[in-house]
Each structure stands twice: as C-alpha cells, then as structure tokens.
Image (cartoon, rainbow, N blue to C red; front, side, top):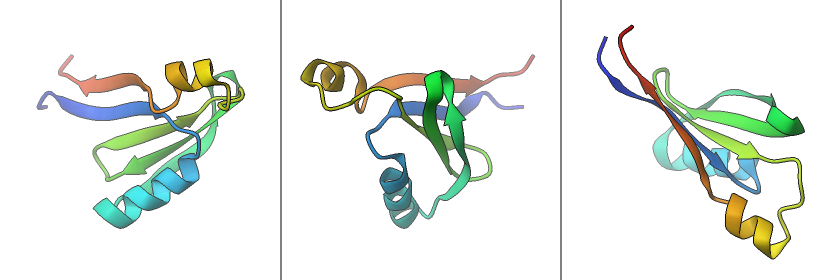
Length: 83
C-alpha cells in the first residue's frame, strides 16, 4: 500500500451547499452523510479513495469568537500508511 492522504476534515456553516459546490467543480459525489460528534452533522464528499469531510458543529456559528475559532477551520487530516 502507498502512503497517502485519505481525508481532510473541515468545519463549515453549510455542509450541503459546500458538498454541492465541490460536486459541480470537481465531479465529486457524496459518499456518506449523517450525525457526527457532539450532535453535529457531517457530509463526506469525494471519490472512491479520498474525501473531504464537511463538519457542521451543533453550536451557534454566528458568534464572532466562535466563527474565528471554528468556521472554515481545519480539524484534522487522515493519512493512510502500511501497518
């Protein structure tokens, strides 16, 4: 197996709109969507091997401090490696 990028997880205010835009621009498809940690919501959009996880947290994203810390923030990157 090659070492490589498997996914990237980011916070967004509207995962559905972001997934639709990414689908139009890159030809990606929704691989999965549903409940996420802390009662948030996530959509995985990408191809068969890699995806972008679009996470919406359960709290209000309109607060200025929350927006600065959370919206469009990089949460984590998943790397695939041999065991």
